[in-house]
Image (tube, rainbow, N blue to C red; front, side, top):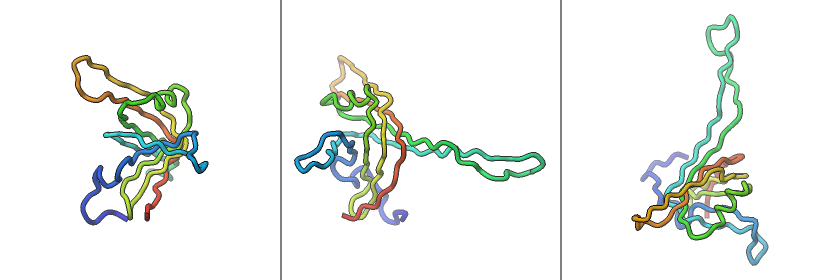
Length: 147
């Protein structure tokens, strides 16, 4: 449902809301979810609708859905090369972003690909080093979070 109280903020997802599923497993044999330290995350879904208008009709007859695009971008604090390796090899991963905790919602992405990576190195900057990624996903689902 739509929020009716205070709007959601970047604090509502809790600690480490962005997680990328790696191929490694934890001590119990479950897929590992690596939390990504980020201060910027955006995503969009474009359905690429095409209006179909036939000869002799004044108005559009129907709207045809074509290829859906799920895109995202985020900045990650640089402290290891795991994301760089995934980007270079175009390894498909799962990803989730927790929008709001109990009760709340989570974005579950299937088969993400980190397509581009950028960084800026400045000899005069004292800011932490960041990696900027953009990518696409096969699909995204909004999952309710109850606990």
